[in-house]
Length: 500
Image (cartoon, rainbow, N blue to C red; front, side, top):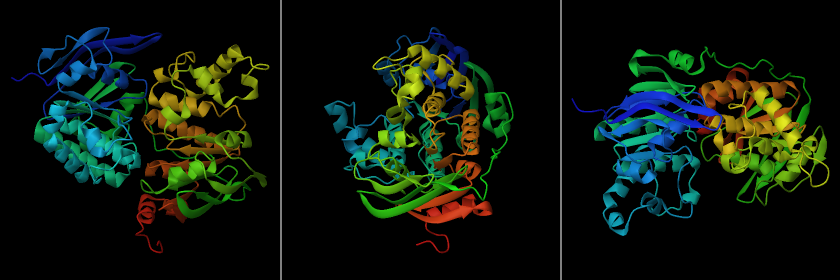
């Protein structure tokens, strides 16, 4: 009998104050797609770090094709045929598609890689993202970059490919083609795939088997044909999760709290308006590249050359930078939390104090660290931050808990307007419910909330009203029963009756 392609045996790993992995064991077979599921903080990222060679376990072993690993380094992992496609694509934006596909190869390897480049481009095209090899990656959308990262992993000749949240920037019609291609490549080329995702429909459609990590241990394992979404979620979070419903929908007679008119960007002649009532959550839906994120960034002047007239409570507010929007009472939670929302090398408490709420700083140039730690710990408890140690650096937290840090830093500012861009990107199902509840609480407190998301069930669950954007312009407004997937997708694709 052939040995397992990958065997993880009794692996353990600890960090200061945190037991990340505790006696983890499972196998991966040739040609199998195995989902590694679990809440943020369950140990998935640590396990991928050990598999990719960037971390060494404190105990246990990793064996590939029956050979036990003797050295832990990224170079050793690549030599064994292990390729990790991380949640944040490892690309060089200034280089072209072809140059990125050939990164890390010697001159001789580049000359011999023509077929691999051709194959990767064919795979990307099959996923619904045709790309030209000479296009610079700075011009690609996040979804296109993720698709290219997936194709590069399979084109590298790897035996084992780990895909960490590969579809976070994609809409559902793209996701189906991507997952079909992943299954095809795994089975056709006998590649073992470890698939990490918080999206249960994806898990059920792409997987052959699922392993659930909970608190650093394997808590559940099953062939996908013998389990259900409910069973997987129950083993992830220890409880049933029902579909989210707003506890505090907006009142129809609530006054308008936030308006923005004539919002423009220097790269587009299109002008947009938005008005949000106190206690209302307005969702913005649209296809990748429709301009949703760019609209939010224009509201806070995150990019130069943006214009528009904004008012809060009927009073005009004027500013020319994100610092000005912060002082005006507008909170912006960006899509890219690692680069735009956090200082990863700083402690959690210092990140929470980044918005410089008056009670978190001392007199003059002095910083009131004791006050920052105390307030941050209190906010962390209210948000369910894990681990609860706010003295840890932001980079030591999982993706979902990093998102809680980004949100926490706005909760002391007294902001009246909250702009969320992909609020649960890379967040597990339990964490999503917590963030949805927080959005609902912020709305119930009388704030104006705007949510941009590529996750249609998310938009449908949290929104009182949905605006659909296409080609940088708001095309339609949806309320009540008209907030449904069919109506929103039809409008976003320009096939709904009455859309241009």
